[in-house]
Image 1: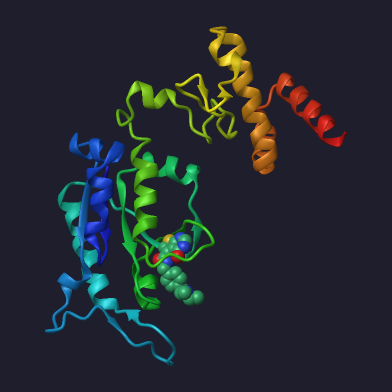
Image 2 (image 1 turned 45 degrees about the vertical axis):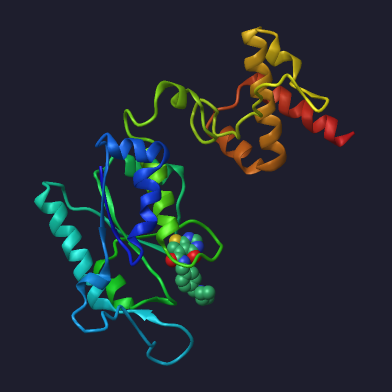
Length: 257
Ligand code: 9D3
């Protein structure tokens, strides 16, 4: 897997290439990161990557030419490495909302070119000519695309074979099939009692079947309360058992009282 990121702030990506699960996988050669700075493709003395918007208004707009040259360099680098043609993804508030199913499909590919905007926006002609996909993290305002690009890389890289060790893989996340797309149950570790607050007794019982049932029910209860949409989605996929449905309807009845 190879990511090429077009960014004015390449140093930000040290976070994914050097730290944590993604940093370890990077050191193991399971994925590569190439950074392309549009500023390095400018030709004027001031190395200008932005300019004032036609039509007026606040802020600056990223110029086409340095971005285009950076993307061309990334495409050429990937071709020379023998990689197939790839999506050019712009991280953008206008994009499709990134989710786990997009991460899963990206994890089956060879990577992508991720373009990060700064300033008020990017000249539309760059987007029209080069961008094949736009992704957003959701409805809030970031200062640029970099943190979104890192979120995408992190979500994809951790899905690659061999990236998570057995322990980490055993940690079932909120959107996989094992948890039926439900939120995770609460977790506890030592001490057994903290300032008078005890760990739920069932977890100390050593009774594996009871523990599994308790965790499943905790997941169902917390998901129903915080993300009822995920209960609906799990039901639609046939991921809820008769036991699950019975437990949920008992919860509803408790709530109605
Ligand atoms: C306040 C500026 N906005 C005017 C209404 C436009 C705007 C421009 C540039 C808003 C955000 C940005 C920078 N954001 C991103 O590049 C970005 C982003 C985001 O802000 N939120 C969620 N996902 C993403 S992906 C890229």
